[in-house]
Length: 309
Image 1 (tube, rainbow, N blue to C red):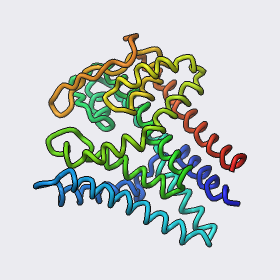
Image 2: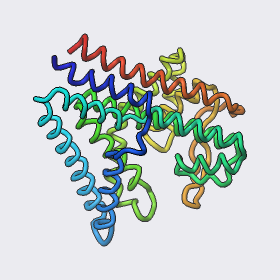
Image 3: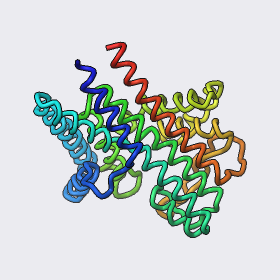
Image 4: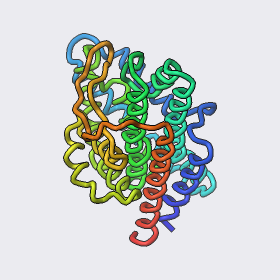
């Protein structure tokens, strides 16, 4: 049965993520992706035609990822045990829900020990400067990251897995890794990473909005759709604002505002208007939302393949 090729690895990979989270002690394809990107950037990001070179690197790496994983899938199909093992581990590697929650809770736990500990731990998971942040700003930063990466690290890879299998999920992870490494609007990457950043925007357009919608569904906040539509588009990113706006609506709080990146202040628009205090215990609420969204996404894919296809 064709649907089993998608659903069995989906279920096993999801359960592995729930139990183990990011397997840091094991070889991880994202590390390989990172080494390939770093090598290509070092060789190509100089001289003239940086935009063209960056586009070429992006296309080669994304296309290569598709080709390699599709080839492995095809070669393993005649061997069910090998195929299901490979595909299940690939789904496991593609998901980042438990790790995202673990890192968010670690920041809150560190903040209980002291402000400097909270700032330091937050610096592990965000790009903004953390040395001047107060406790409220640290908690907001965690929630912004958890909502944005709920799309990037969970719903989006599952979306592309549902459409294209393991190769689709891994190609998406390559796109996302490219954006996280070279998609910055600074002097070094402005031109070289331009295509990678735009490709990431395109790849995340639908998943980000699906993520925001499911977040509202699992919390019974569908009446907040106008809020999400209003504030989601005000974010500097065409996608990140939607899951962030969904979480701000659910928690009835305010995200966004100015932050420092690489020594420069970036004035980001506010998402929401209720500038209330974020309590320590609310990390538990956000963690539950992430778990529910992941479960619902897996369930919807399963229903679609089992009953529709």
